[in-house]
Image (cartoon, rainbow, N blue to C red; front, top):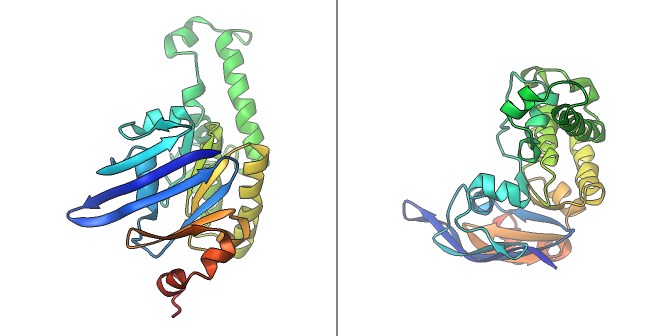
Length: 256
């Protein structure tokens, strides 16, 4: 069953085509990767899906609903969460507080209601407790307990990447877009990321689309791969099929 379907997507900036008729299908429950050289259009696809960019032509269907024209907060409420190439966190807030921000769209108690309904047995307090329990599960899952109350600015880069991943998970997405999740990580952290990506799919019932340059990570965890070059689709297929595609070998792996 198709969870995300992109059909004939076109977008250009200043007359330069970023995507030229790109189509792709992501099945529910799959780990799907997008590869290609810098400037191939990988992150542009994410920005179109999440409503940051509006493509000039094409369709983007998520669970059968058209995402074209939706704003980022609307796509988030529909079940799409993402991480970024450059970490987008509140540096002076703790890990716990950053992850709780991922719960904002699930919060039902407003400021006024929360102020009026005080006490540990109030609806506001019960809701706060439920959100913290959800976040604690994610902190334990990502093994970042030691960073729970530490300001993000004081954390190592690899841990900050995990905090951003945790915040996206806190949104309870159906589809998770990971933009270079292993960038800046050492080899041990990258190996851990392989397991986390699979476990996120299995334990949280989340489908994943990943943009990634580390080919070992891509080939190890992906069910399907889309290869792009200069905004043009080269192939969508199984890892071995993509690995051996002549256009991929020439454009991405640097082989003739």
